[in-house]
Amino acid sequence: MDWHKTAKFKQLQSKWYKKLKDKGFEDIEQDETRLKKWSETYFTKGNLSQSHPVAVNAKLDYYNMCRSFVENHSFKNKTEKRMFEMHAEGTGIRVIAKELKTYRDKVHKTLQRLIKVMHGK
Image (tube, rainbow, N blue to C red):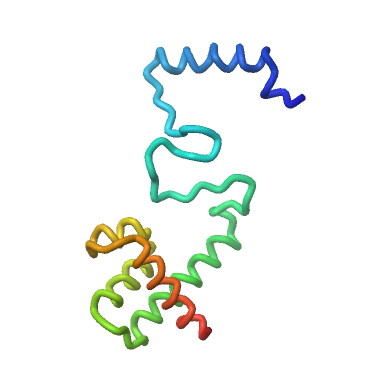
């Protein structure tokens, strides 16, 4: 049996959750994998840390490539170009969609298509 499923653990967990609640603590997690409120921040769990030098360098290289693509690619229209500019700045899909008053799915599909072009596919 997993230790975190034992009655003893559950009892101790309840005790500490009550103490936290009494002190005014509000948990941001709904459960082990979901947040109560959506966040633009990506959290890793068991993956390569986002602060690891390899991950940082890979991200820098990717966004430099994106900025170069913005400067050199002939976009279909101003909206598509702005969409990719925002992506190149690290802006999330939900924020892009909200600012450009369009659907997340449209932003996602457009970015995926442009990223393939950027990579020469």
